[in-house]
Length: 286
Ligand code: 13P
Image 1: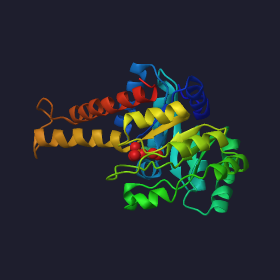
Image 2: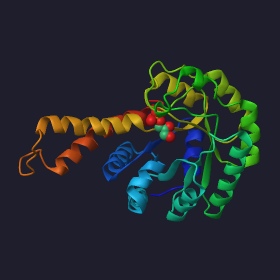
Image 3: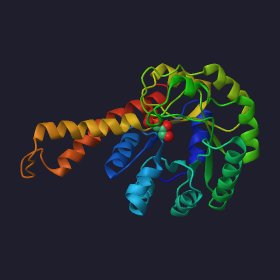
């Protein structure tokens, strides 16, 4: 069933675990994520990034919502990293439960103004805003370890930011990065502990791909309540497609067993499910 993000995140926090938030790009990834959550009887969040929505448009957004509505477990639908207010409003209008209003690239005062405005928009739709303070770098930025370390969340600023912006969730930057970078810096658990003493809303950890399980679970035990994962799931899907291509060769014959489009999709779903399953278990501290 389609549920509110804030409810499933708060419920996870109450249980001392985190809810897995998985980026999806198409119906097959969505099925892989939702069916795994159903098999494990666990709630999850489906997230669409701006590039996915640009590529898939309203049909992708509505298909994701439909998959959440008919799921046998609680599923929330979230807009990931968005700095475009019109798209945030559009997603709430479609029925999304939450959005990450990402003003983290902006100077502090502008991030605050942007996040406040997003909270006003979300309130009209009874939706939730995740905010981000401290810049979360990623592979696409060609980032260095020094750059990651210079953009970590300031605990005192985080307190003021959440209180004054009205955001219901806060994404923290504690050394986590998006995607895989060589030799990532260690997570700054001391900083996380300080942010947790200053901020009363649930915290979100981005960039789970490539993070060691022990670090993720330590962060969850400390209080992280939503865990975002994208690259690892997407890569599993891509690897299955690549393996299918090698096996079938340059001239697929849909009449042959294992060569059809549906076979390809099924293989991609199956390999994605393994990553989703282990992430959900990590989130449940198993
Ligand atoms: P990864 O791609 O590192 O898993 O990060 C995903 C993410 O944080 C999405 O917001």
